[in-house]
Image (tube, rainbow, N blue to C red; front, side, top):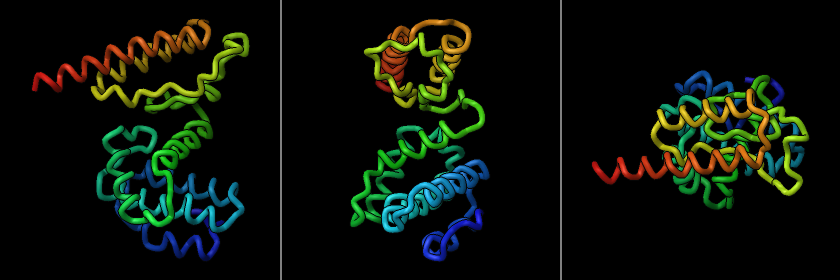
Length: 195
């Protein structure tokens, strides 16, 4: 754990890093803590908007067996959001935007693109400016709605191919992504209904 934490920050997190948590998640949380401490100067905002939620993310990871924040699925996100609301409802934290912020920070700040992440942020994908549409405001590609892991992996591989080999416009790729995502989500619902 970083040594740049202030005393109050350490008191909030005291004991939580000793919990049995996956090493990837520990490294991600440590990185997020450093990021919050180095970029958010307002102590109260840092503590209530980031440190307390991260404390409970550590608890959630220890109890749920979470393996990677970037691969946190919708069910895990909903469990964490419920935990956070029960524990620190008085702080009025938007739990979903907190998780989205964690995902985005980890994805954008990584040395390499994590093609296995469940949400990809366009600004990290090294796309040539001429591939952007002036009217397009596409910020991310989310694979969260695709609950069957094999389907998710197939779509991720195909989209990776489109980004790295093909030279389509972002808008065109987003249309392809939406069509396949819809079909795979529909297939998942059909499988669930049959059970």
